[in-house]
Amino acid sequence: MLPKIVDDFLSLFYPASCFACQAPLVSGEEMLCVSCIAHLPYTDYHHFTENKVADSFAGRVPLVQATSFLHFYKGGKTQAILHQLKYRNQPELGVFLGKMAARKYETTGFFKRIDGIIPIPLHPKKRAKRGYNQAEQLAKGIAVSTQKPLWPQNLVRTTNTTTQTRKSRFARWLNVETVFEVRDMTELKGKHLLIVDDVLTTGATIEAAATKLLAVNGVSLSVFTLAHA
Ligand SMILES: [Zn+2]
Image 1: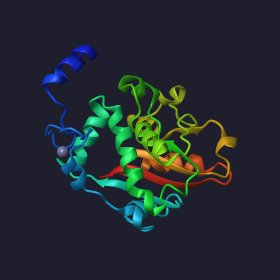
Image 2: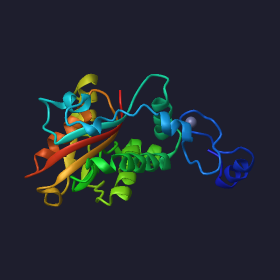
Image 3: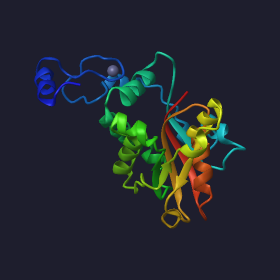
């Protein structure tokens, strides 16, 4: 990565480009160009209690409501955005998208009904390597816009290293993928929590986290992900 001073210097000559289509941004645009913002593949699932995301959790974990902000198509704009967010050191893009979703959902009450926001944690090692958790960045944007509390410390991802050595590779993978712990049950008691993650694929990660959170007395859950694969 370039030192900041070099980066600032270069940006005088090379204006920032849109994270979805790479077109140069013009004055007043930030992160995404106006055209991309107008034409992103929005799911609009938040208008419907029953939708593909909610359906994918049916019979697995009970949810109040669930949505993904964008459809994911291979080679599409959502993929470009996710790539920047996850691998190109763009934590502010997450905050930007979280705020964007909050504004778009404002009239529907999707976020109004929740008490607090819980991003899906990364493995501590992965987080240290990336420098940030993209789910937490999205959650931050939602929290700022909705003025709902963000609780990023309470749900933690752990790996049980003592028993892992005796497990098969697949079992280890399963273990690593699904071990979550709630640190302080009293903080979450009776709350309607919004789980936030970047992409929804099989839903196994969210299901594992949700199962732990639902073990807390009186907790109800909703889910928001940036993208639905
Ligand atoms: Zn664009």
